Length: 193
Image (cartoon, rainbow, N blue to C red; front, side):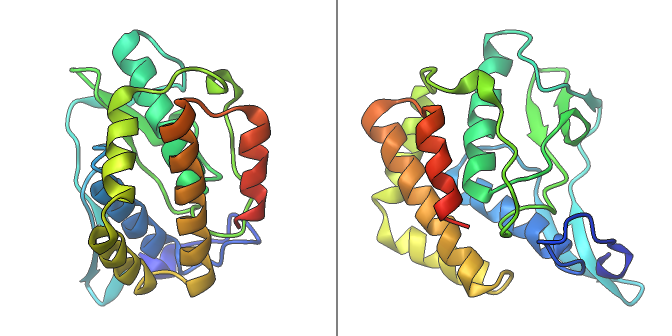
């Protein structure tokens, strides 16, 4: 619940983490990535907060590929985290099920003018074709972008929504054009916070 949040980063105000959880889910949903379990905002016993679908039979997943499927998913999570400006991705907020499906949970420290937590092992590596296709489809659809923007504006400050779309367009175009992200290119993201 919002009232139970405690400040973890000076840059991200407490009482907003639950909205960032929902916003992260919406981005995941609109990009069709399948990383974040369904997340809604609800009032329960007089307290407003986020509620996320429970995924049974999972365990924490350390941010290390164990096979081709998990490596591909981690590359997509890496890009997702750059787009939503996640500053808190670690093995404690990734879970994996029996089918090697990885879920990105605990997305409260996102979108804000915080530092981004980047993982160097994926720089300059070919990104999955499925990710390229999904980003291409989203960026080619103005109506879908408009709807996502309207939904995010209900949850986040306008400057954070604008920065998100700048990052999404920048990263999306890099991936569509080259299929990779280099360390130097990722440094440019600091302009979009």
